[in-house]
Figure 1: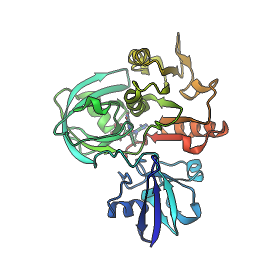
Figure 2: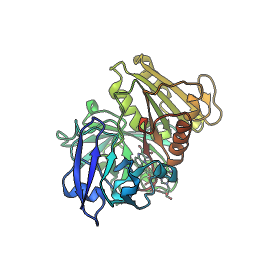
Figure 3: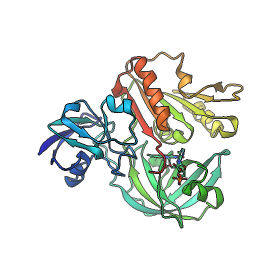
Length: 331
Ligand SMILES: Cc1cc2nc3c(=O)[nH]c(=O)nc-3n(C[C@H](O)[C@H](O)[C@H](O)COP(=O)(O)OP(=O)(O)OC[C@H]3O[C@@H](n4cnc5c(N)ncnc54)[C@H](O)[C@@H]3O)c2cc1C
């Protein structure tokens, strides 16, 4: 039997007993602990934590973690066993706590095609009085007639309930994408599992910078919308591939206009024009100086996250200042 210390973002901590044969996530579930878990196969990223005592852990590969993240101590607790006592740092607070993940029913209230490759779904949840989520979390959506449920980050905030907003990229040949592309319409009955995930804003940072690639905009938009009236120093760097794939341009301009402490920067990989820069979300920070009290929130495909982390590391940003949600395919 070993001890695992879980250290939460608000300074609170708890200890778990972990048997030789079980993972840290399994021990947490057995002891009803607030460690957030989801797929239990190292693919969704919900149970990620930072461990500084690598000699005390036995870890299996987790697809959601790159080799360099593993070297820096990031672990999927659902793939991690202990050899001795170890501490795990989590990016979310112990309180306030979201509700326990539950199955909810709902229906599509709106489906808007925002650009060639992205749809916005507004889902009205039924019987969601007990449902509490934190900006940055995701849900699993199961469309009507499909056996699969896919994870999608929530772009809206608690204030919008019973409606939740999702931004979904159409993946060619994808099952949920196929439903979206061919037939998703208002009134469709869906099932969701929510809330899930541990991606959360570092609200105590002097400055929060958000980097989003494509539909990676969803969770950071929720974080920004939730903090829009707080006066906190917020910067959004949003990157898309081409003009045909750019979405929510006008809405982001309006959000920036109504939020004086928010700086919105947008980049396109090709054919940028006017106020839009050519490049990636990351290149929008090329000439920006940041203090050690700045925190970074990254969301998009794992390679985008990995290159951003490398650049921040080269620029001397402390590891604990970087938070990320990785949109791994087909979890
Ligand atoms: C925590 C989390 C949150 C997510 N949030 C969002 C979100 O807010 N918005 C969003 O658009 N997506 C998000 N994703 C990705 C999303 O869950 C699905 O992977 C994606 O929508 C494809 O589902 P599908 O059923 O259409 O395709 P599938 O039937 O799963 O896949 C069809 C084919 O496409 C490939 N594929 C699947 N997804 C991708 C991809 N993203 N890039 C390249 N190839 C792919 C598969 O490997 C497969 O070969 C998230 C993923 C995770 C893990």
